[in-house]
Length: 298
Image: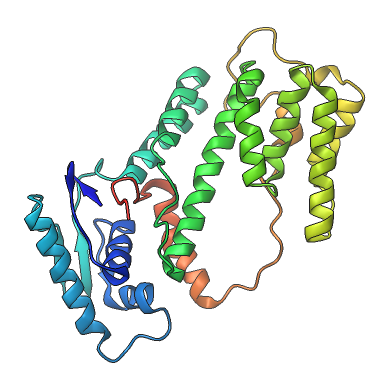
């Protein structure tokens, strides 16, 4: 990993998973039980707490040896890593995304798009990539959801500003990677239609409908079906704005109202009590205090 421009060499999985868990909750004391779960899930050995102490000591030595100081504090309940607010890419992402949403509410779409794009640029890859840990996988999934939500908000504004041609390529890639996100599919359909590609827009709908039916046994949501009917009818409400115009606070353009539905309809999942607790603990992280990666190149 890299810290303050200096290379820090970590040991194996235990050290990497432990540090990743601390970074996800930087500035907060992480209970020892949570660290055990991140490393061993439900089957920690009898010596687990001792092994955690050894890992922490080894990481501290690496930090000190790299000249960045001892960043990890020991507390009765666990450990805390202390970092400047802008030290982690995900912290910068959260800050810029919040500024972007504020600018959008204040009818400053161009500034909002710039801030959203700056926020998205902070992502260098998946969170805690390569670490097989249930705790870290759950955190990574929720952080990815936040990233995609910011992207969808950004594209909504760009479509309202008449930048449909600019976003087509990016939307094709994102829809291929996230085929169940109906809002993203709708954004692509709208961008294609406004670019004079009605047939491609309708083909995208058919591909999404086929995928949802084959893999989940469901039809596209009402908003996506409504958009398909509007494209077939060449509804004038779908036309691109004649010139970029800011959206009113709390409102979207008429076409956006066709697609501003939940990004995708999740198939019912059986959550354990532990997973629900995990989601609760990560809520504040997801909203304003996202942590990790980029500086953590594991």
